[in-house]
Image 1 (cartoon, rainbow, N blue to C red):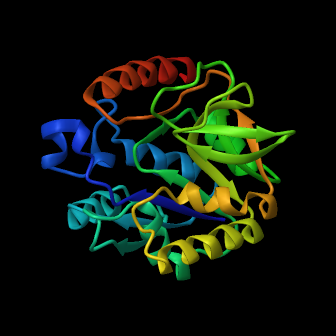
Image 2: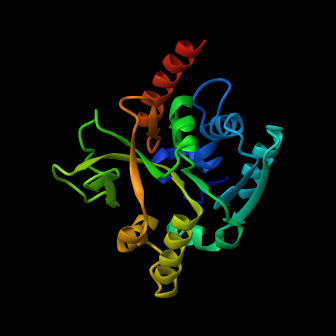
Length: 242
């Protein structure tokens, strides 16, 4: 397996903090940044190679990752148009490095170790969902058809939808089909939308299944308020594992 860590966004909703470093380098406690925790979990799951897309502060992020001495080999893919594109374009730029099964994480996502283990161990393509949460107003929801995911987006509501987070495992064949659709979107000039829009266009050919984390920590940090909430949950989670 190879990991894909998406870190080309500007993180403007974090305020002044992301004027000094990329959002993935925001701290979740005294020892860990968001991305250092992701790397630790990936290493524990046996991941030895990761593709990291970058935007602002690319050199700082590279220095931070290399300082972790994780043993993971990192490949860095800059998105020079990060200010005017979404991560669908970053994925397109990284396409030649993404082979084998792929673990894909947004760079602002904090996970419980049990969630990462379940994602990595899945024998089918999967995405993290949480049936214990109300549908978020602005964040991703997964729309289900029988036992499969047929769409993911912020505008999905209804009884067939469940809260979702961008923690994915794609089997190689499924990721290749998603990437084919991503290439088609980009070549049509659709670089500013979510990569999930491309998944939605091809879902019938991609066997993506919900992986229900049922209340375990699996949350993005978009704002300072999110950072405070997630950091408190992270502290409680670490105490439970000690």
